[in-house]
Length: 85
Image (cartoon, rainbow, N blue to C red; front, side, top):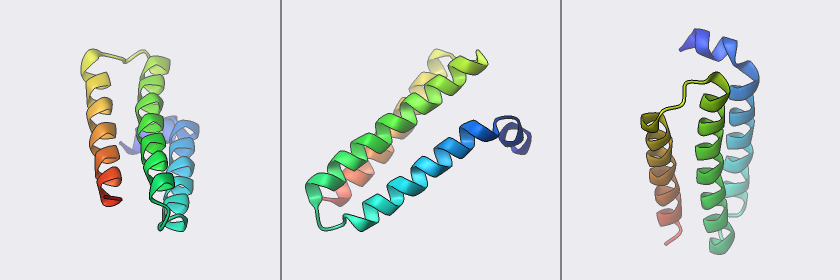
């Protein structure tokens, strides 16, 4: 995993920066439920497309990889969304 991070510094840095900014925005907008729900959807969609695009770039895309990213992004999005209920 460490060698994977070192080979693709820019990709993982972009993911890390986006998730940090999203976390900050999520915590900063805590009382506004509508904004939090939109942000939850944005985080999930970004993570899914980030994963798919990275694997397309590396030419390691498969149905299993797409389903894995879809499942993780759906689970994460639902958990964030349900926090606002």
